[in-house]
Image (cartoon, rainbow over all chains, first blue to last red):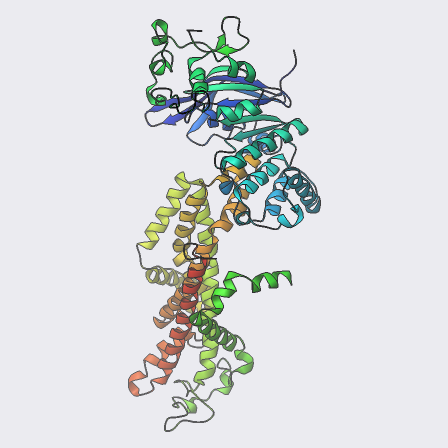
Length: 321
Length: 305
């Protein structure tokens, strides 16, 4: 069997609260191969971002990884020391955030920020670091990168800043980029541009991509695999083609039905009724049953396992498939 | 040259040149600083050199009054020292103590504020309660308290020998909470911003993130308080000296000059107190005005660039 680049098994993340523990991520598992692109989809609060952060073991307090393993290049990231982690962060696995207005430090020129990032991981001269920076800026199609290096973040537009953030993420040629809703804060026209750029760069450099988003439309264009998350669990995972063409889980089906364009013009958009349960008061049985049209019998009593169902080539967590 | 060009085009200079109050304050401030620091060359007498002082010259009024002498433009004090020279030397002492104390305050306050704000929890609770306790006394009281400890520890003779560094230490220790609180408040706001998260994701350690990424973003309020604190420190030093706990009479600061002259004010020699008093007021006023201007420039809400 081929070894995966990243293997997440049975990941469980808890948050310590005054009222006791709260499970934000429950038995999440997936794999990522070299150059593979995985989309994690779900609505707000489903645990997508927490999953992303837990891969580089950077969950903000009071959260912590309570169980499971994250195997990257042969090392279990939940067990290695902080030093090893620091070496992996930004270097082997880098991350892109939602809002490019906020992720760049306003008091430094982008050249300084880029050089600093390289120098944190590589023992090269500042001049060489700046050269790499120029090269990467060119890759993300920033015009005249040499002069741009000496400018401050506020001198760039939102789309340009996100390009710079992508360039920073690419600086050290990471094996995986985790992009947490990279286009949510941008104009629709620029969104497409940025997604295309990300796709192009990942393909060219054979970089693995984990794309976290609530936009199924974006994911289906970019990724090869999709994991649909609901209330801290993966409810369906499989190849993008299969899932979009023939969703199994009623939640996935609802998401696809809710996409604009899935109904005729003039009709109201479909909406999944209700909202996601609060993690502190999870319903018994399948977490989705209060919103599910098919719910009956064991849906109310037992949590469905994520497993292969029928002869579909993917995993789903639903009794009714 | 590039930096100079950038400076010439900056909003900083632009707003300065359009604010007459700032220009006048700056000119006066520079004049006072130059006058005090070139005192050994420009002052007509050396008030520290006892051989040039004659007690026969004591309490001579300023030159425009009856009995005034051309040699002593602003008159002489009770020991026969030329007022103008003594004030120039005294202002130098005041400014050195003021700036030194502020540097110490800023250093302590910034480091403590940064640690409290970033680490939080027990470290934060400890330092902030310490600051609360200290702020619940008046700064002057804390300063008197510390200086009393120093005076008994060193003896009065030693104390007056090292009066300048000791005063810097006293005033510095008495006012660090101002800085610590301001810096902590900004750090609390800054550390939630995504660039900090991004820096963690890039793999920087917390010390690097604190001092290299967060600190520069909290500096503008620090600059603003610094100007006001210089004025405050000069005042504190003057107050301590006025109470007899500051600079010794042999090396007077503006405050000890005022104190010295105060005993003679009812015998008619008003100039010994009034001139250093005016000088102190002018010095503190221009520093405060410059601070106000700086606050306006650095306040992003007022910034319309």
